Length: 372
Image (tube, rainbow, N blue to C red; front, side, top):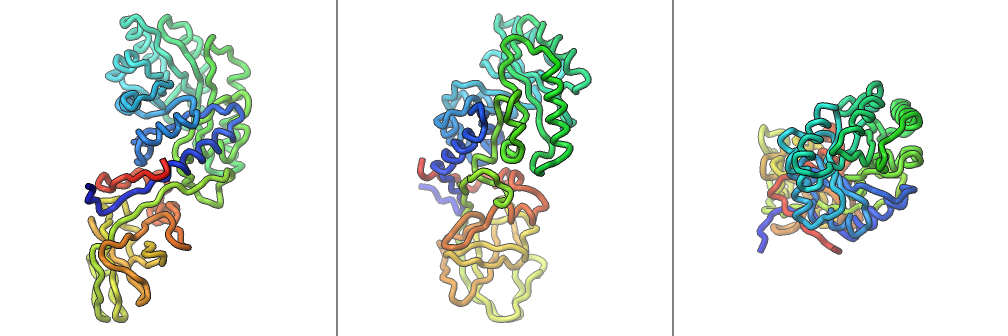
């Protein structure tokens, strides 16, 4: 029996419908499900299984540990390590048929040497830095790099990819420049035989730039879009909300006018007020910026947060007619009754974005899956 005071509810049926919608938005219908960081904190085992069932072509992770974890979940489709690989990861990655990124020739040669030692051929993606400035061959040396890497005897280059830095903005000139630059490279470069996967778009690219999923691009990547998480007004695709973050009320009390609430007495009551104490704080992922500046939904009623958020608790001011008692559930984001709090509402308080909020949910928050 779980005694968790807080939980993230995940509607797997809605996740699957979102994945299908995203796949249908990619002309090639080939989608890499990105499930790094425990599928952005939602749960890599459940999400990778859902993505596999929906027909995703392959999976993307950040590290070898994440790749091997997917293998342990029974994922047999290609698993691609994105961005970079450490020397210490190469041997086990090759042995477990993990697709590795080629970001420079030194790494390419090390992968080739280890593959030859094992009597294998390593599957690899050639990574191009088209303007992200993080990892990969720059456009100035990409043609030489792919020719040299393609000549290595124990490496098979199965794909070429890059990453858009600013695709969350529609009609962004920098994004268009990145797309045009990579298209020019691809149009003027002979790719190695067997190089079949060409992609640059993650979810923002899919949502905002049709040219990022059109020829010569024949694949796209998607992570947080599977959860329908974005500024709702910015969504081009009809995606569903899939997540609800909840925590239990541990106490309901009435305090007289003049009472201070929370650390540093940042809230002083102007009148007699009912207070709900919710078992969720900054240790669970709620930013301090939400203090005196946000809301929860309690029994379908939007209820203001008052006082400074602490490690384990947040206090809310209850209207006299708002039903609440210990054990009731407060919704931190998601829907209840006619009220909805989007993750972006919390992200703005954090000066951040949805990814950051979701990945910051603490490990004492249990994950619950419905409609699986």
